[in-house]
Length: 195
Length: 195
DNA sequence: GGATAATATTTACAGTGTAAATATAAACTG
DNA sequence: CAGTTTATATTTACACTGTAAATATTATCC
Image 1 (cartoon, rainbow over the protein chains, first blue to last red):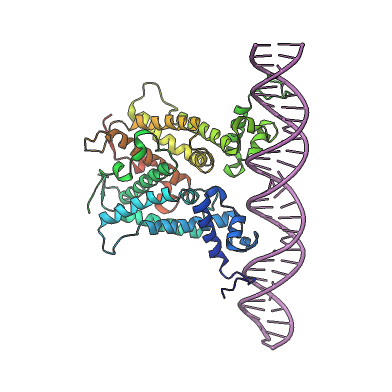
Image 2 (image 1 turned 180 degrees about the vertical axis):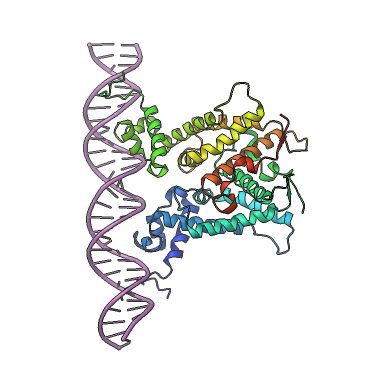
């Protein structure tokens, strides 16, 4: 079934996403074209249409895989019984590292102009990524009010902070002067948590 | 000098940027092509090369203008002697509104893959935009330490927060469930300032 | 007023995404 | 098993994109 000379590829959908990730890693977002993915998977340039419809569909699938990898990155090196403080460290640090090490993929993941923002798979994996951040934001002491949605607002603030820092860093907006060598835990170390 | 039938345009650089902004506003980032800008300015599709070199150069100029407009948006409706609290309200709210109302331009402004991140004009106007946020972050009470760079770290946190929320909102990542109608001042109302 | 530089056009070309028609292989049905 | 239908992939064609080279026009400078 892994015969190279088959007319049908067998697992083209996966192969195209994988080829896309390789291209992103090696040549950047500008080189991520439909035809290049097809070449990488060893098929004609119109084959992707059967599986993804059009370029935006393929891009969305690659972005969804990006969220999946980001979620994994935020959880690597964690024993199952790690403390919440350790989980938080891994999640926030992992988010920023991911953005810096995969600038093209990260840009694609938050690019409504290249992806279908309502793609179910994309939304699902983005939601799982958010869930990890929600977990580690638990216990944050910052909202003195007793509003019923205090937890949700703390979660969104957490995501906004981490994502904003990651994007500003990855897009080179923090490369000037004293900001150059600041890490996220230099910037957000003062929040207190009930860990 | 405003004769339409001149061989030399006279102010093509400005006209191309303006055409680009119009295209972004009316048709979105996907339609922002070098040729479309040229058509909008009424010149041949190779004329932009003389002023911007290539596509990335034109994109960078449009992004720089975007930062300029963002800075203006953050300061609109402010009397010269407005309180810092009012300035802060205008700056943070304006940042988010700008991202929502100009999603294509906002995406371009933070897209290192489409622009030249080291473009001097781009960096200058991005710096001015950051300066406005630095101004309104003054007096923020959150860092109990007396580290020498406490102010800088507070400024970066402020920018990260506002930018992260703006981007998550503009890219549709906050459109699900309870998050849908949250505004930035619902999420970040609890910080205290020495105003 | 004539040389030089700046600015814009024409033409050409390789690369892109998409659509239509066609070919091949798998899956289903009797 | 044979025949049909469906899924998958290819070929071909086309309009559109950015870039480069050669050329044309106008402004600038001495």
